[in-house]
Image (tube, rainbow, N blue to C red; front, side, top):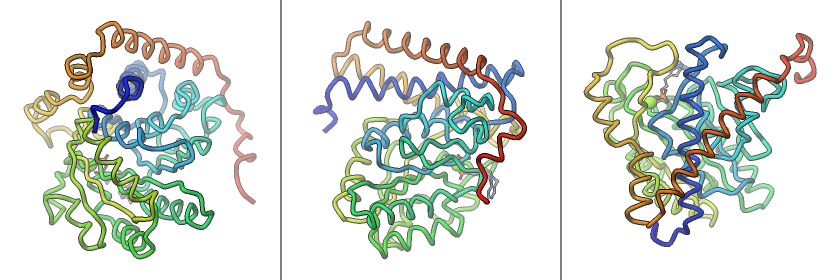
Amino acid sequence: MAQNLNEDTLLEMYEKMLLIRKFEEKLYFLFLTRVMPGSMHQCNGQEACAVGVCANLVKNDYITSTHRGHGHCLAKGADVKAVMAEMFGKKTGLCKGMGGSMHIADFSVGMLGANGIVAAGIPQAAGAAWACRYLKNDHIAVAFFGDGAANEGVFHEGLNLAAVWKLPVVFVCENNLYGLSTHYRKVTAVENIAARAAAYNMPGTIVDGMDVLAVYETAREAVARARNGGGPTLLECKTYRYMGHSRFEKPSYRTQEEVEEWKQKDPIPAFAGRLKEEFMVSKEAITAIERKVDEEIENAVKYAEAGPDPEPDDYKQYIYA
Ligand SMILES: Cc1ncc(C[n+]2csc(CCOP(=O)(O)OP(=O)(O)O)c2C)c(N)n1
Ligand SMILES: [Mg+2]
């Protein structure tokens, strides 16, 4: 139970969520002030999903991500400075400036990549899980994807094969109600995406994706099942994104009231409150984390700004012939 978690783990989860939130808030500011090139997809509001799941993983476990991948990348343990430099397209970035926001990856921590192709990470995670089986290690893979991805063909193919082969994988659907500007109920026959697990003979679980401890506990079971040879699980996190789909946002597909309603459930202040009241964490300890995160982000921006741009010919080093 959550009550058995030690203070370090609890504070680490708080720190990671805060890091993701502040990292993206900084990106948003840099984007608006035209320092940041390109576009991006923010996960503000969804932090508890990435952090609650990844808190159950070890470095050599794998994750695959989506176009909305900053949170997954940081939750899996990628270096903040290198992630920031990648956002700037710098040579000092995690992918030498060749990936940017939507194709960022860090194999050294098992982060197999953000992905511009909706649902593409699902079969990739099944493949990584198959590799873990083949190599006879006890590592597992997790695929993060959205509600929109759950309507793609590879979702069904990936879950089916993973179940048939009992692969060590967890499929984590972050149902934030929308795929771009389309409400999921307009394009999804079932209310709960987790219900589809029945078709693939695997457990399907629904969890409050705004509650990091609930995500942690539920994912813990699914991760243990995968690791112990019990096969895959479909885990649906009910969540919400506070920002637009991307930096380009179609107006008026959702109401301000709806956004405000979900902001009342913001996973970060809610968890800070629980840390103080339920887990007796001091106000000072919380403030110290907030300061540490601010400093970390400031340093990351300085590091990114100072880094060199890639040379035009650099790309030749990173292609296969
Ligand atoms: C195969 C494919 N189809 C369409 C798109 C365009 N597209 C990019 S993001 C997106 C919405 C995805 O929604 P969801 O899976 O719910 O993820 P969310 O954006 O909500 O995190 C779409 C349709 C794409 N990138 N790839
Ligand atoms: Mg969605």
